[in-house]
Image (cartoon, rainbow, N blue to C red; front, side, top):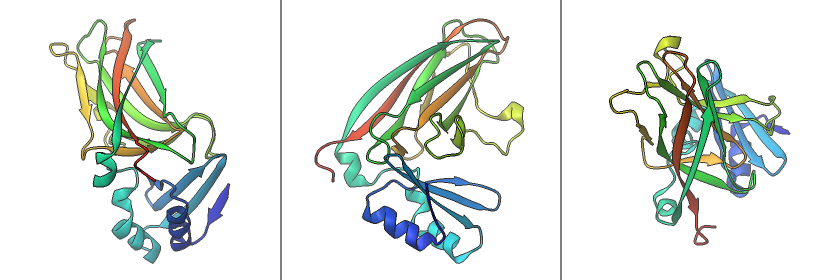
Length: 212
């Protein structure tokens, strides 16, 4: 692991090596990281600082966010799926992002999921995690949450209607970049804690040989 003290140094390094810049936002700042093979590059910046202002103005919207127009045009669609049985009313599906960590990524578009026996109160929550400790933060580290973690616990995630039991989730703005080696973690919760199986399909994109 290598830690950069200055955002400008980290940004220029990642840009030169064509690395994906990921970030986690905290109450006091941003934890930035890029992955290159077994090496994790990190940079922590405080909110309100000049580094934070530069990051917010130039890079934040491109980190963990939609890919550029030219990349979208050269993306090849990829379909993946997963399923898991509930344990104490909770099914957890892990989908590892394919490719070589630090050298490739996938563009996440969205997907849909459902329980075999839908019921009232069924819900899903979605996270991006590091299950293999690539970042050195421990196995199972949550890189990002797609739920509103500032909301009270009972309001986080999406409910699944028993009358229209297939829940569809799409990206807010086309595709979202996710570094290879990380995991999409989908937690599906039964409203009545019964035994069931959760199924899901996912749309991804991969750069074609036209990208460099």
